[in-house]
Amino acid sequence: MPTYSGCLGEFSGLNDVTAHINASADAHSKTASEHRVNQPHSKQNQNLAKAAAINEKKARIKLMHKGQVIHVELSMMLIDGRGKHYKCLLAPFPDVYPATDPIEAVLVELAQKLETNFLQSAYCLQFDNATYDFTFSSCMLNSIHGKKSYSIDKTGLAFKGNLDSLFTKLVNSGHLSKADQDARKLCLQLIVPFTIDEQEHLFKASKASVNMSRKQKHLSIADDDDAGQSSQHSKSSMPSLSRPSINYTSQWNRMLRSMTTITYEKFPFRKTVCHVSTNGDTHFEDLSDVHEIEVSKGWTQFVKTGVPNGGYLSKGLYKYGILARLNGNQVALFMHKPAGSLNNLNSTALHDELDLLVQGNTFAKSFKNRALVANVKLPDLKYNAEGAFVGTVTVPLPGSGLPIDDETIEQEAANRSLLFNTFLVVPLLQTKGLFSKRKFSGNTDTGDNSDYVGKVVDAFAHHVVEETNGHLMFTDLQGVVGPDRSIILFDPQAHRQVVFFISSTHVADCMIALEAAQVNGTRGLK
Image 1 (cartoon, rainbow, N blue to C red):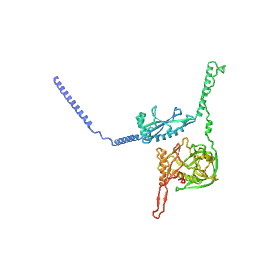
Image 2: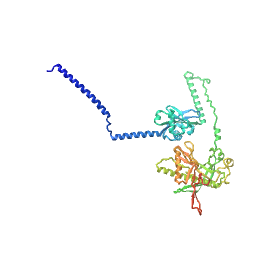
Image 3: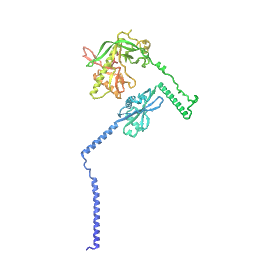
Image 4: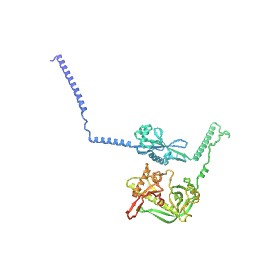
């Protein structure tokens, strides 16, 4: 039987073994941990790796794209002639543009869209008889940062650059919120001036004052009744109805003097129309039916002013535009200026202009078809040629050409409505309200427009040159742009390529020369 001392010895040896095992385990555990840390990662699933790479690539592309475009949000506020601002609850108009687009071109386009939305909404009825001026040069521009707004100098050098330069300037000046910076977004506000018809304003102010006086009188009587004095009101105790002290001046006489009553003179005439054949050639057709046109009288007295009035519409380098009526509808009638012109020259020039109008409209149709083939959607573009014709009076006018110019026409032709036996008639275009008149190129300057509508007209001009193999080029392109960005061009002018054939016993055959001959709607005026 073991003694206690022997047992204690055995227990003592066992403790040593246990300590040794624990020390070895700690050492191996540390070595194993270092071994695992230094091992390479386990091989990832190939599909997961491929998906991760695609997602990373998408993120890079999205980041690059985000830096190439800028979001523009344009809201509006109104300002009257006294400088008082009025909020407009119309929703801001948002759009996305390349960062390299010119600032002014983008904002002019957005202002036009904002104008269309505003005039078609109920918010334009906020003020009665108000006229709003959305012309971009007349409006002020603010940058919106939360509830604060900062004025932007449209004449500054930074404003003449692109959207990216404006964005950078606003970021550096602290005028953009952090959220707008991250989204590359410009929150801008257009301050639109407006005017109110003064007569209507004074009438409403007077009416409001009278209503307020009546209300005060009613309240005063009610107060007396409450005090037990409703019976036996003396005239002296009754409050008097005071008239508003408004210095009213009637504008009717001034308006009446400024308005001119248009009278018309009737002329029987026959039409000449222009047709286009399937191969593109044009030809005239003289119609036998006799029609009647009413031509405004007294228009010559307004020529020197250059302001449309009394039947006078416009004047160009070669011709006058005046108001006429045909079958009860208003139309525009054109005749050449009488200085140096005779009946036959006026007739030739107007026939050539009608020919060019019809040709231009034919090219506009082929331009539209070309866009459809290319799957490109364009706004409606055409020349003002629908129903156009040359008219010739059946009873010739006395005399021939009139040797007068703009300075003397008022005295020399005061009693004349028609200056020549022949005239050109086209539809009368709307140029007010939502419609605007615009020039896209010059007579010797090609179009270089930066906005959407301007680029469409530039593309049309290139189309005509290609379509005619360089034989015809439309110049001095101008027209009326509608709220839907439709374009009606008028007063066509063009340059033609002229081919000269020279016979010679020594030199063969022919020489082709380009002559920059302005057509001006006519081959008769060179």
